[in-house]
Amino acid sequence: MKIYVEWTKKIEDEGNNEFFSNYLDLEKGVYTSILAEKKDIVEGKISTLAESYGMDVITFAGFLDGINSSLKNSLTLDELTEEDDIKLEIDFEKLLYNMHEAKANWLYNLEEWTNIFSIEKMIEIKKQFNTDHIATSNKVGRNEPCPCGSGKKYKKCCGQ
Image (cartoon, rainbow, N blue to C red; front, side, top):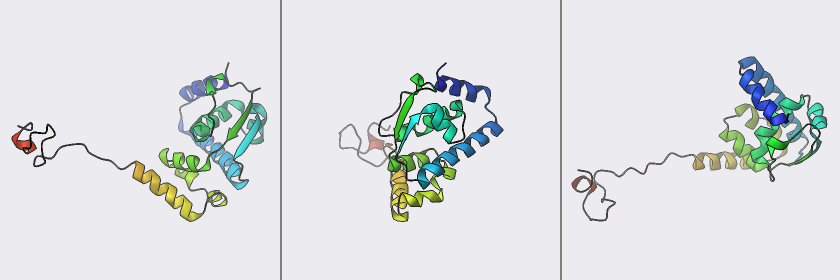
């Protein structure tokens, strides 16, 4: 069976807080290691990489699922087996942005980020994330011109 399929089955079966707490600790350890070493390229056999980060292969598939959208060339997760060789080319800017999007404060607040970016750059990425996620409304106000183009106020035209 493919490791990603096993991972999705495992999270469905084991959807409890203890399991996820353990997984999040392991995930944090992998990111801490990658950031501390400034490793923007991680490559090797999946089983070897999993072992080097203290994970079993299925749990490592969960890590790959999480980082996949932050890679320069994403992986086809459904096809991976533990014997496959992979190359993760990490886009650190995208990774930090995606961590904000996932609300993963235990990851985007890692002090190892200062090995990668200056404080100013991290603030800039956070500001960009905030700007991209500002709620906007397309609702027409009662006293605004009607969008139908009649020249009348909305309340006197289509808003009646």
